[in-house]
Image (tube, rainbow, N blue to C red; front, top):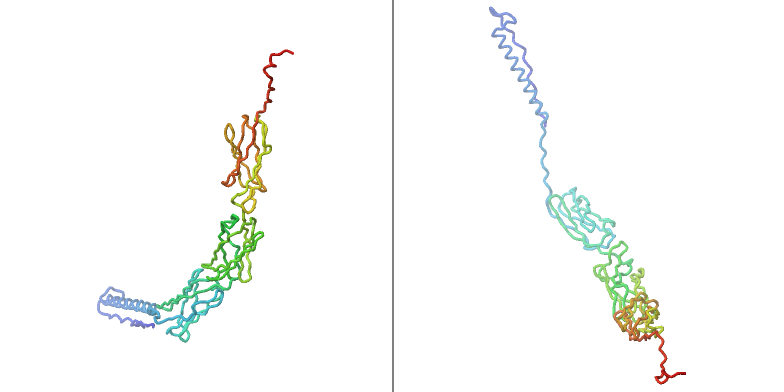
Length: 372
């Protein structure tokens, strides 16, 4: 509200009395009183102007709004499938038009939604794009000075894909003495790990044998199992299936690990002790108890015990066979040769080392001094 003050109009100056000895313009007492009266009126006019200016500029201080405080409650489902819209109703005794703020705390950070109360309720709608991530969601509603929280579980949808199995180790020994650990991961159409307890089918095919089929339940998004292999060596594929979806194959090698048959020969078996002639030492076919050949590249060591010392000759297996040259020693005698494969020694063989010098003919003593 504005208040306007009306300034008092100045009164006309009173006529100066004309006394004896007084003249217009002279510095008489009447003249001084007249000037003082005019100065007082001027000051009053200035004061009235400033009072009017202050009143015109004055504004009433607005009152601070009092935040609403009352009772709030959520009406929302306890769980929902990922990718489906979720209605959230906030009820309370707030008057119509009161603003409400909903904060959703989920896997991808906070999301904010706004609504107003109509008829004692505020309606929010979580769109499918905001419910695509499975997990636990916290709902926080704020109206004025009142806040209320609740929870919502977003569960994954039906399995739609499965990743290639993780297999470790990728190479195992034939015969069933070792096993490979297999881990499976499946997801729904939105990429969420499937719910706990979902059955995944693990399959593996082996060379010359029946395949393996295992049903593995998921826990924490993973399904874990073990594969034991049979006696037949070779390469196999491991894959998973769920709801008609099939993963890529993961290769698994089944190899012979424990040699059981190590034939060993020397060609030729007799050498002259000349330090130049060589023989070929051959080991193989080297196989396990089931007849599986040891893998190519497996290290073997030929061990030779000679009259003048010992030798170690390394070689590798190719096609189940290993070979190495053996240089004849310079001292006649016998060489005992074995082959060492993966900690297993073969049966020994003997290589004869003979004197390369021809034997002198033996002449009878009676004929040594006779003359022809």
